[in-house]
Length: 388
Image (cartoon, rainbow, N blue to C red; front, side, top):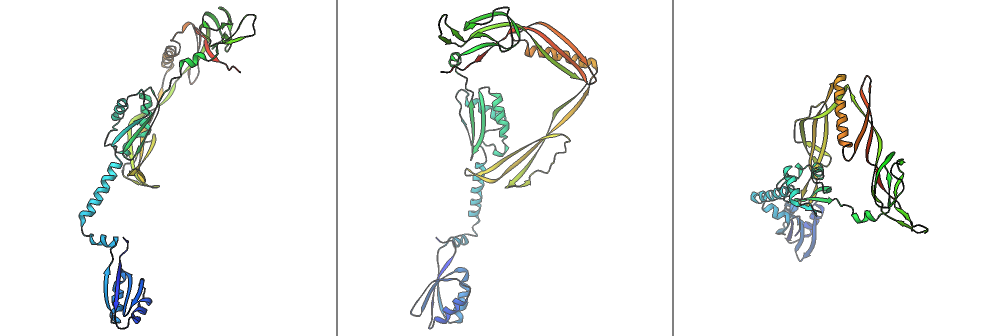
């Protein structure tokens, strides 16, 4: 079926040749021309038919016109049937709606993590069936899944049409048998004096009471048989306890600045067509200090990404507070920092034998230099490569 509308015309008269010459001199496009006796047959566009009729009247020709079927003719025939137009627009609107809302949430890559756990976390963020794709903050949800589920090493969210695909990569723990078979030494982590040794595999190099430097081998994984050049390589296993010193420095300033979020947010939405942004909201942020996050979500139509979408700019207000403290208040906060430091870094299997504190005060604040004498595990494994 042709797109444009054409007419088959038969012109009959005593002398058709003046009429034929008039058509050739006119702007009308005429094709498929042939003569049969006194009948001239040709094809023209329907829009040129009034001109041909006028020329036929001038040259006393009788026209027989047959309109050929075409797409434009059918559209013109149904142009006043508004129900068809309404149905087309409604169908397009429904397809557009279902292409940009979540119909199915598909989770890929999970082995130990249950899908119900991921779906419940997404539901807490307002993501479920019927959610607009443009309302989903994908970067935030990906970070949330990694933090909330310890077994998740990586998470990615994308959409294909109305399918929201959540791709998960779980952490793979290293096989324990491989670590135990790898040749290694036990070396000293600190400059220390050995107080206790428990060896399960390997050859002891330093005895109890010996002093070692950081990096010295305490238990060797290379064992040579007596009176033999043969060397056996082992994965050294054991526990080495020693006494060592550790230094730290903590400072509290008299004047401190702390920036925190106030909780006020303004979300600006734009309709983006290529690089053109048309604002959908009139409110503009008037914060003196803020952080800005921009998110663009394109529209889809039948799983095809369109060059248009919703661009969101989220502006979060921040406030910087300046706190002035006296020397006594700074000293109290500094002592609290020391307690937290010992609880967080020196509490697990570490015994504090002595702690020397040196306070230094200047115009900016108070600094405490800490020198600890500790008793704890000083050994750590160090793999080595064996050439064949």
